[in-house]
Amino acid sequence: MNPAISVVIPTFNSRAYLEQALNSVFEQSLCDYEVIVIDDGSTDSTPEYLGSLGDRITVIRQANKGSGAARNCGMAAARGRYIALLDHDDLWHRDKLRVQYDFMRSHPDAVGCSVPFVYSTPPGKPGFDLSIRDADGCIPDALERYAEGHLFLLSSVMMLDRSRIADLRYETDRGSIEDVALQVRLLLRGPYGIAGDAPLATYRVHESNTSNSAAHLFRGIKRLREIEGSDGFPGSTPGQRKAINRLISALARKMLVAQVAVGRRDRAFKAYLSEWMHQLRNHRIKFLCMFPFLLLLPTRLLQRFRSFRTRV
Image (tube, rainbow, N blue to C red; front, side, top):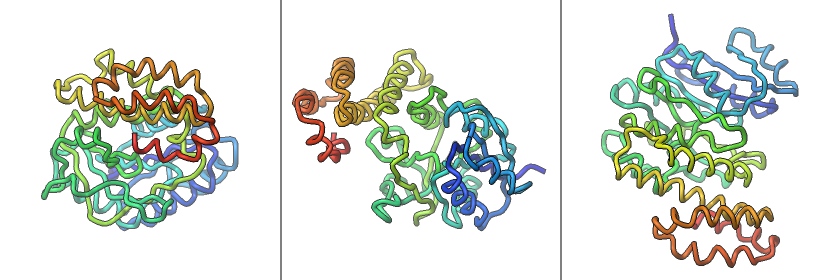
């Protein structure tokens, strides 16, 4: 008999974080789940640790291909009606799966749902504003809300209906933004909701978070622009395509400042030129005028004002 939920966890060389993440799964109040861990070519003690867990988990080992390919592998192996994704460095609270399972069962048309979450640093900072959902728990115009910067699609807080997402998969370009294209396509498939009122997951902030990597952002924006330009979001309306462009443009502004902050001014300037029309279309005149001055600032001075990234 298949489990109700398949928990999919990609991991690479992060034994300490992984052990804590798995413990947060084993402590769930709902127990009708399987755990699939994709060891993406770990060379530390991760394989030995996973082996010690016996039949509590299913382990799939593969050569290092990146988190997108690892998630796809786990999703393909899933047997549950619902897929709950968890990054190896994040944590779930005890009732996370139960609350989401109850939501999905009562919203059969939903393609998925998220739960409220908090950041580890600063401690307890909310991940997004719960007011974006309606009285039934669903998010009206979810793609529009996402484009506005509401971060309700973090992988570790999502539960997806496997019967409705069908062939949806993550991008597999290594060291890139592998999740945004899937998230956009997911929201184009049907309603999406938020389950629960209290935080049910913790996103752990640390120096190795790939979302903070300038190179990661640069490659990711390049790939997202390629997808956007090749009609890679089929079924989207003109209004939805505008929202998608706003979303990618917001990420691109963060990417441009990140290049300058790490001293890649040549790459920043070329990317700025390629982004010009997109930013102009989104009326980001102030950013377009200010960014050339950032290129002239000393790197050390710019790094003191990293918060600028979140305001552009």
